[in-house]
Structures are given as structure tokens and as C-alpha cells.
Image (cartoon, rainbow, N blue to C red; front, side, top):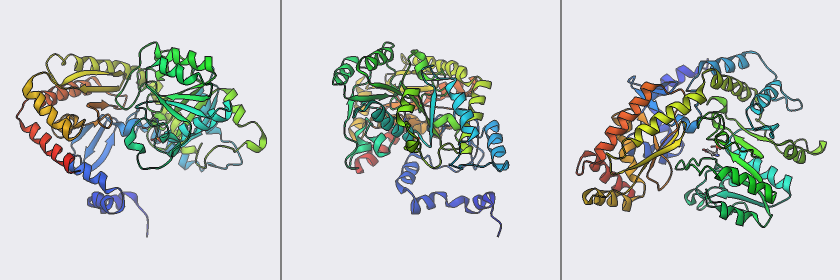
Length: 459
Ligand SMILES: Cc1ncc(COP(=O)(O)O)c(C=O)c1O
């Protein structure tokens, strides 16, 4: 029998949710059905998804930031097709591949000039794991510092640097010697560094959970303090990197020079798992310091041809289509547009972010009638208010978005970087209408709120 993916998809089209209920994480299916996100998408192009009825959805999640160049970008597809049809000698292992060499060279042209070596892996978490191991080995120190409310991944090592309790609870002992400091707090950082036991301070230049942007002096002073105490300064740019924040790297907003930059997500255009660490020669040479240690850290699929080819194509697209510049421009227009609504809406606190990494935060209102409604939702489940914005955005306006983290009243936008002016206008109009609805108490949207609160309380 011949094997055909299109035939398989057509034949089993209607079984998607059943299969997941039976064989995968059925809680995810429950979530999707409860909030009405249970659609059958059939096609995806650029910043849009299309369901079985041909309805177009504007995607503000971009697969958690992997589709910076948009979904199914033809240049990346062509690179992957070429790679497959060339019968290339992939993963020879007792060899070094040309594509990984070319991608390393290209990435290193974008980072500060103190970084001149690349390590490749298969995901963001693997990049974090590598940074932890390399920092410990290179400095001969045990401790790793990270920030409260940070997110660095969910493998045991990266989870040890995770600032949210919900991700860690019940999973047992994590790495020893990992300590959290408050984000954007230099005094706490210096206190923690003073012991000279800290191998690395690993942080997101802009925190993904909640989109927290530091003060302008923070990262430059982090760099100074790390140098002063001999600690490696590691920028986790897994989410913020590759054009996302309107500069190629988020650290470029503050002109700092970390000892390592971690990357993943957008690097391969969303097609192939990939991760990487740009680092100083000193760190790389201290870990791989003898021939018998040439394979002391790595993984089987790292540097695979598909990921490397997709990476090369993606970087070309980012440059050719000026996506970093577009991210800066479109992000500013969205943030300014939402902030212009603050005076109209009591629930709306602010929009913030850089480029197309944007938070829209809500807070408790002043007027008594609205306050009672807000308090009811907060008591059921902190952060539930945002669902009353994201659900209508999806159902009425066909915009896919998400709450920025557990227990926070922040809606996050992380769209593809090729947004157009028309998309931005659609986003502003939709937010305006969805937020206006939340101010009608009682009203249909608050009926939804009560239903969601009921689900939360039952849970
Ligand atoms: C800043 C940051 N670091 C690390 C990770 C983990 O990456 P991955 O999910 O590819 O393991 C993420 C994922 O969202 C992230 O945003």
C-alpha cells in the first residue's frame, strides 16, 4: 500500500480531538473546548490560519514565537525541499557538516564581537541546559542565579531556573545551587554575586511571562556586576531574539555584551526543532579542552541538516524582508494605539513591550459596580479577566491570542514579524471592541465570566 500524508489527513480529519482525548493530553482538549478554541485548522500562510470553513484567523501566538517569518514561508520550504532532495550525508557524526559551519558563521555576524563560537542543540531548554553545564565547567563554580518570574524551559535543569511555582510543584528535587533574585533589582543581584560562588546569571532581557521590560540601566549594570564578581552573564534570547523586539537581539537595545546568548524558537522558521548558544571562545575552549572531551556535551540530532538549512534560509528572510525593522514599527503602532485607549477604559492599565512582544495589562477598576464584578472573577481564579478579552477576540474577531502567564491579568501578543498596517488596525479595532464589552456590567461577556469562574471553582 502506498503511503500518503494528504490521504491520511483527509481520511481522519474528524478524529483529531478524539485521538488527543484518548492517546495524548486530554486536559488540553478540555481547555480548548471550554474556551471555544476547538477549531479544525486546515491551512496556514504567513500570519494567518484558516479553518475548515475557510475562516481566516490572525495568529498573535505564532506557535509561541517560532513563526517570526510567518507560517510556511516559501523560502524556508524551498531550502528544506532542496536539502531533502540532494541526498546529503546528514548526521555522519564522525564528521563535521558544512551547513552547521555556515549557519554558525552567519549567526556570529549578528552577535556582539566578544562571542565567536556556536554550540547547536534541538530546543530552547537544551540551550539552557548547555549554558548551565558550560558555565559551571568554565568557572568551576556551582551556583546559577536566575530571576523571579522567569521562564527558561521545562526540562529538569532549565526548570531549576523557572520562576513560577506551578511548573515545579510535585516534580521532585531540582538542581542544587540555583537561586532566584528579583528581576530589575541590582542591589539583590550584587548581594547574591558577592559570594563569588556564582557561575552564571541567566536571564531574559525582557521577561516572556508578563512581558516585563527592565529599566534602561539594568542590563548594562548587570554586565558590570557580573564582570566584577567573575560571573558569566547569560542572555536567554530564546523568545526575544531574531528580530522579535525590533532589534535583532533584545540586548541590542542596551548595547551589552553577554558571555553567552541562547537562541531557539524562530531560528528555523518554525519547521524544525533547533537551539543554539553563542559564546566566547574562552568558554567553548574550556569545556572542549582535550581530544577525549570532544563529545563531552552534545546531542544526536543537533546540527542536523534540516535545522541548519532552515536556519540559513530564515536569517536570509529576516534580512531580505526587513522583518526586524517591521517588528519595531508595527509594535510601536500597536502599543501606542492601545495606550491611547487607557483613558476610555477603567479595566485597561497599559500596553508595554518592545517590537512585536507586547503585553496588554488589566487592573482593578475604580467604580464600584465594575469592582464587584472584577473581585468575583479574581476570587475564582486570578487572571480570569483576560479570558473575557481573549475569547471574544477569537470568537468575534478571529484573532488568536493568549494570557501571558499564570495568575496575571496580561494578554500577550507574539505575532509573526510580517504584520501589515491592516493587521495592526484589525488588532486595535478588535481590542477596542472586546475591552468595551467588558465594561458592560451586567452584559453577555460577564455571563461568560461567570461560567468561567464556575469552571475555575469546580477545578
Ligand atoms: C525565554 C525562554 N527560554 C527557554 C524556553 C524553552 O524553550 P523550548 O520550549 O524550546 O524548550 C522558552 C520557551 O518558551 C523561553 O521563552
